Amino acid sequence: MPKSSPTLYRDPDRLAASDRVAGALSLAIHEHRLLPGTKLGEDEIGEVYGVSRTIVRAALQRLAHIQLVEMQRNRGAFVAQPSQQEAREVFETRELLEPRTAHKAATLATDADVYRLREHIALEHAAMDAGDRGRALHLSGLFHIDIAGIAAQATIAGFIETLIARSSLIIALYSRRDSALCDSHAHHALIEAIAEGDGQHAEELMRNHLLELHEALDLHQCAAPPRSLKDALLSRES
Image (cartoon, rainbow, N blue to C red):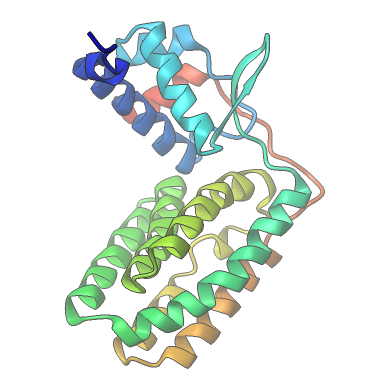
């Protein structure tokens, strides 16, 4: 009898639990409740989410695969800490890719796409008004991913999504100016250019917006994790 693939015997409940924990940790990282350099203790995470260390380990491996987490031998898992050089490279790459993607999105966007972008920015504003800086930043990143999706360039959109995930870590480490994190005027102007089908203007606006984000970084100092892992995770769970 041929040997069966081990994937056929995966426990669906365990897989679902691992996905749930990975998603919760990812959101906490993107919302800056878990800052770069935070040690991700398996026991603490398991206690917060009511799962085994095996499930936690699988979740951490998933996040390591997308570079949100670093696995260090004999030390454990930590929220990733992009270097200053990587910070420069990430934003320089975004400055190359996203303006052209915005141009393409403006030529393809439907009324439904524009409506969805407007709804998205309303959520971003609500988070800012509530003083929830982390959620506003996370929504800002999703806004950029949505524009890449409208452009219907799946390969480039995948690159952009990865770059934006790294950008969230970079901003947590090196940002010096809150106003540049979620510039509502820049996003409003982008939506209007996309709604009008003005690809050239959308491209220019996106380029200027990303340059402002890049200039808002202080690549000389890093933030330090301010609180315990458990407190950071429970700040959303409660």
